[in-house]
Every structure is written in C-alpha cells, then in structure tokens.
Amino acid sequence: MIKIENLKKSFGTLEVLRGINIEIAEGEKIAVIGPSGCGKSTFLRCINCMEDPTGGSIVFEGVDIADPKVDINIHREKIGMVFQQFNLFNNKTVIENIMLAPVYVGMKALRKKKKENRKIKLSNLFKRAEDKRPLLEITETKESIKASARARAEELLLRIGLLDKADEYPSRLSGGQKQRIAIVRALAMNPRVILFDEPTSALDPEMVGEVLDLMKTLADEGMTMVIVTHEMAFAREVASRVIFIADGQILEEGTPAEVFDSPKHPRLQDFLSKVL
Amino acid sequence: MDFFSKIFELFSTGKYMESIFEGLKNTFIISVFAALLGLLLGTVVAMVTIARPSAAMKLPKAICKIYLTVIRGTPMALQLFIMAYVVFAIRGFPQIITAIIAFGINSGAYVAENVRAGIMSVDIGQTEAGRALGLPSRVTMLKIVIPQAIKNVIPAIGNELIALIKETSIVSMIGMYDLTFAAKVIGGGNNMASYLIPMTVVALFYLAIVYALTLGIKIIEKRLRAGDKN
Image 1 (tube, rainbow over the protein chains, first blue to last red):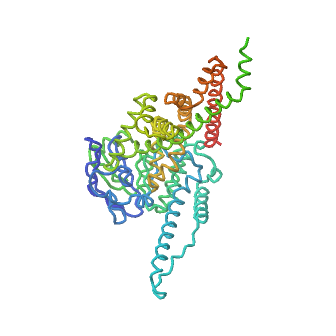
Image 2 (image 1 turned 120 degrees about the vertical axis):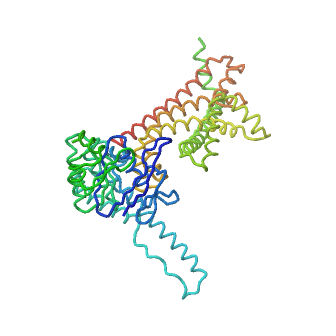
Image 3 (image 1 turned 135 degrees about the vertical axis):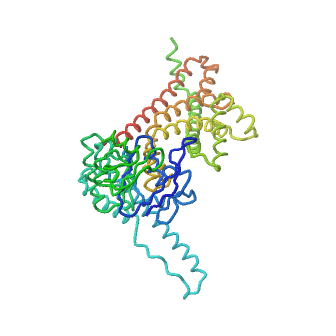
C-alpha cells in the first residue's frame, strides 16, 4: 500500500534520513524503534509529508506523494496521524474535534458536485434536447453531512466509553482520554493507515494502558499501523514487523521475535541492552 | 472663585458645547475608521509575514518588512504631515480622509506585530493536527489557529486602540478640528480666557472614552475565556 524508496531528509546541513526503503502492506503493524534523535519521528512525519522529504519517493495508493505538485491534502485524508502531545483542537469540544475534518471533506464533495451541475446546466443550454446531459443527483445537504458526521463521532466515542465527554473542551480531560479521542479523531476519516508518533510518551504511567489497549483493538481489527514507540513489550506483542532505525537508516528489520530475541546488528544489540 | 462658574459657563454656552461636540465627532470618526483600517491592514500584513517563504511571497514579504520598519521607525506626526502635505496635497481633498488613512496605516503596523505574535503563540501542534487530517492550511488557520490567536491578541489590540484614540489628538497639527483643538480654541477665546477649564473638560472626555473601551475589552476577554473552559 505504501512503498518508500530511498527516502532522504535533511534540515540544512544535518542529514537526518539517509535513504530509507520499506514497503508497507495492507494490515501490517510496523513498530519503529531506535535511539533518540535517530530519525524515527522524522521518518514517520515524512510518510504523510508533515516534513517534506528532500529526496526519494513515497508511493501511496499508486501516487508519489513526495512530489510537491501532488495535492497532499487528499492523501492525508487517508493517512491518519496520532501525536505525542495529542494536539486536540483546544477551541473545539470533543465531538467538534472529531467532526471537523469529516464535515469539511463532505462539504468539499458537495461543493464539487454543485459546481459540476452548474457546468452541465450551462453546457446543456447549447445542446439539442436529446443531447442534454442529466444533472448529478445530490442527496446530501449541509445538515445531512453534519448529522452523519455527528452520528459517526458519537458511535466512536461510545466505543471508547467517552460519549459523556462529547461536549467538554479538551482542557477538562486527562491525558489518556485526550489521546484516545485523538485516535478516534483519526479513525473518523476512515484512514487506510494510521501513523502513531510516540503516542504514550507524554502520558502519566497509569494512563498508558488504556491507550495501548485501544491501539491493540485497532490492530486486531486489521488496521494498518506504523508506530514509533518506546514501549518494547507492546511492540513485541502487537507488531507484525519491527524496524530498527539508527543514524537515519534502517539497520535491522524482522518479526518481533527476530529483532528482540536474536538481534544481529551491534547497534541494535547495544540499544536493546539499554532499554530491555 | 470663578472656577465653577467658568465650568458652568462652558457647559451652558451652546457655542462652546457645539465646538466640543464637533471636535468629539471628528476624533470619533478618525479613531473608528483608522482602527478598522488598521485591523484590516494589520491582519493582512501579519498573514503575509508568517506565510511560508516561497518565490511568489518574496515581493509581498519584502514590502511588508519595509512597511513595518518605516512606519514603526518614524514619528506619527511626520507621517501625518507627509500624508497631508505630500501624498494628498490636493486642493479640496477631505482632511478627515487624509487623517483616517495616515492613522490607519500607522496603526496597521502595530496591529500586524500583535497579530503575528498572537498567531505564533498558538502551539504548532494545533496546525499540524489540522494539516494531518487533510485540512488545507487556509482552513486550519481559519478554524483552529485564528480563533485561538484572537484570544491571545485581544489585550494587545486593546492597548493599540487606546493609543490610537489618544494619538489622533495630533491632527490639530494639520489644522483639523478635533477634541483637543476644540479645547484650545475655546480656551483661547476672549470670553473664556482660560485654558484650564476646557482642557480639563476635554481630558475627561478622553478619559471616559478610553475607560469605556477598556471595560468593553475586559468583557470580551472574559467571554472568550469562558468559552474554552465551560
């Protein structure tokens, strides 16, 4: 589904990623591990072009999204992202946080259809009756788009047991609640893949479990996930593949058993001896 | 002690009150329209300054930088003179428009800096979350960043408006009749023959306006803060 070739990223003269190659298939759960400052997060942020890659290609659903000419927003709708600092919108309530992007996308599609219909009407003026093109059928309205986004958001909130917080502002929530809402906010867009950027690193220890549990449920449902994490136990349990990044390169990759139990690269051996 | 009788004379003489209200009207018109122009200009300039550097933005960015440097680096009175005697030195051109443009352009530079600071103060993570969901930067700005930035800039914008109102008193330097000039004219007249009374009264007018504005801003601030906690 995603094919990354020779991905490079430099900040000024600092070379953070020096050619990363990886292919991610539908349904894979990839855990990205590695020492701090090795480029794990940068790698993840390049996948949806939050950081513009300086070289290489990222082919997502057949389109190279690293190409600056591509409209990245359309593709980002299908690539969810969960941040270390949650980043819920502070000026929106919980349910508005979840509804915002789906409503925007729905309205965008509606505007596009209406525009197309205006075009058809105009061109029909110059055509004989039998050549006239029929108008597109528009069943959605602004209200129906909002209502269906709300229904979906409520369903998601119910699922994580936070429906009673729907009208609260994020400042009233605990870190674990915020992160779970951030995850369902990404889910509301029905993404094909979700990128997790150290989703539990900013949480109090007692809240890590609830977030990992939700992620595990998603994994079991077959969601494609790329997870930058320091939770080695979680990586071992959930990941279908673990990749070890150091010095801006993938130094080793394999199943959790291969990577954790019989590491080959000395850097990985050294890293694991420190974190396990 | 004819202090009180003088005050009474000022308030009871139709001619004097007419002068004061004529001046008040001009001060008011210049302040309101200059503030609107300043807010509009300032917001646009702030947007240009914080926009990502690109080839197309190079020229607008350079223009904004020169604008900010020149306007904030030269005296307001001088800017007003240049507007009145150079740029709009056209016979019959309404002075009040000259003044509105001069003060609006001046205020815009300060508003731009406040707005820029307000937008920068919103956590970058908010923008990133919006963009990661596929929202274009314009939508992220309008729906996420600006509503949060407004809350941060209201106090600074309030200060700027207060400064603007008081600064309009220098329009008398290009011969415009405003509140301050009214005090001078009344005080210089043979009948009043005292600057103390009209100047004090006019000072109270300014104080009342500024105080009302301060209260208004406080209420707005309170409302906005209530919004994100409730």
